[in-house]
Length: 362
Length: 267
Ligand SMILES: Nc1ncnc2c1ncn2[C@@H]1O[C@H](COP(=O)(O)OP(=O)(O)O)[C@@H](O)[C@H]1O
Ligand SMILES: [Mg+2]
Image (cartoon, rainbow over all chains, first blue to last red; front, side, top):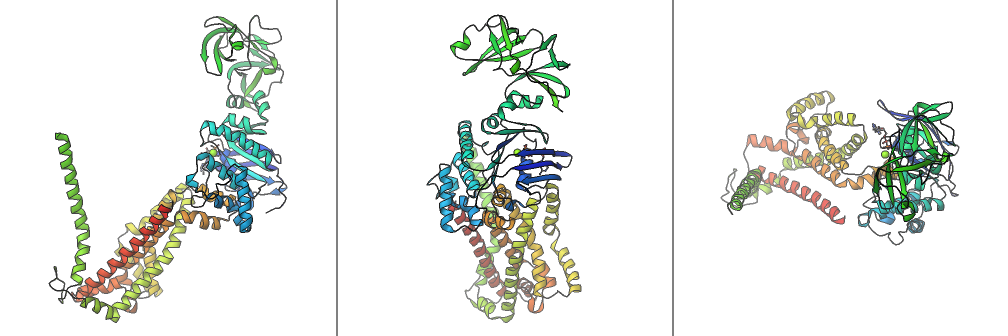
């Protein structure tokens, strides 16, 4: 065990892995900074687990390179990679006590019995399970098992921790609580974390950066905010956050919705398959009078109003382009001046909120 | 009211048939036991007198004792070889691609499906070339081949109920594959391995057909000697030996069950 724990950067280049005709990893390159919390986000079957298993050393890529720090690890067996790993199923050893589970990596490393005990206890304290050492795994709830798995993965102070959908078996409330807790834990540990999820909200909540994976390729790697505000393709825009999209025509670096040119602050990303205007329901502004000159005018008629507790979703029939969703707060300020069904509604989309993406990233 | 009565009659029928089937399954086995305590010098049922003379005859006969020793040693060696070998084979198949696993499973089942007499003839001819006929090694190798499928099938079904992520977790935490297998996987399929070992032991102990052809001389198994003795003289010693064999099998079976029970209670 290396004494001074210092997180390591990960450098993935041109990784390929095929299962028969399925390209599970299609030329994946990704640099992860030391100490970063990076999330692999993508739909089921997109290749997230395959990439994580390649990092862990359980599946051998067909080609490409993986470096931890300045060391090439592509041929290193899993047990020599020094990783902590957390599985979706927790993968705790049911015939051992909580403390024995957590001490397992220490036992392998020849740590003395008494040190095993103190380290395991400290790790359990960190995940708020102090005093649970003598319990059986079967006596724990799902959330507690998740914490034990975490404690076991970090007790030997690994420089890199991998997690494959570790929270997806928990119910919504506990999951959201654990997201915050995990993020705080990451700030305490000096470790690079690669986290896998298919839940975009979870990815936005926890990550320093998010790599969006689709069909074995990485579509975009960005910070949560920039990923949300400046998606590079329709896939990313559609997968991350709520949106409706309308087809637009692009000529001479300007996009046209119907006859009208759209004002946008960001340059239009290149790609194939035409472009779409992506409208986030909460970024549209309901105007009482006319839409100001500086904004794009998306006014139309109210088609339906749906009460959703924390907010109200207004479905608007745009004059020419189709239906648009607008979200307004459910408080009194949001509701004053809101037209009723069938009435005309003024909608402004400001240039900084105007997202125009290619159907497929180049 | 009528429906409930009808259901009761149906239930009664089922019970009667069930007990009858059980009776026919066990009766031939149990009938041997009173016959072994008979004082007469031929097999009779029900016995008209009581004595231990056939047990004495068995335990004092050098031939029977030698055959018993051969059979027990063969069964123990078969168990010791077939259990680790079959368990590793099951583990290997469990980890392979589904296509390979399915193909291999058919191969593995073969020795159970093929008539034993065919295997016996094949083994005999092969052993004739290798000089393994009438040797203990020959018996053990043949019995191991017969016992392997039982071990493989039992251990594979055990592995199916095991969360294999645990072994991956152990390896990612620093355990070599062998260490992870030994400290994490094996303890959790222990009961399947024990059951497989029991089946291997019984397969060897009970085996007649291959032993008839392949064992002999000083290395004749007890089943072979019993078979020959049945042909030559119908003598209640056979009943005494059978009773001993039943006791050994039942003790082994109960042992495996008890170990399994204590493990489950532990959980
Ligand atoms: N062992 C395997 N054999 C065959 N195909 C596989 C195997 N593992 C994954 N795949 C395929 O590779 C693709 C990516 O799978 P995976 O990495 O598990 O996706 P994710 O974790 O994003 O849901 C899927 O199409 C899946 O069917
Ligand atoms: Mg997965």
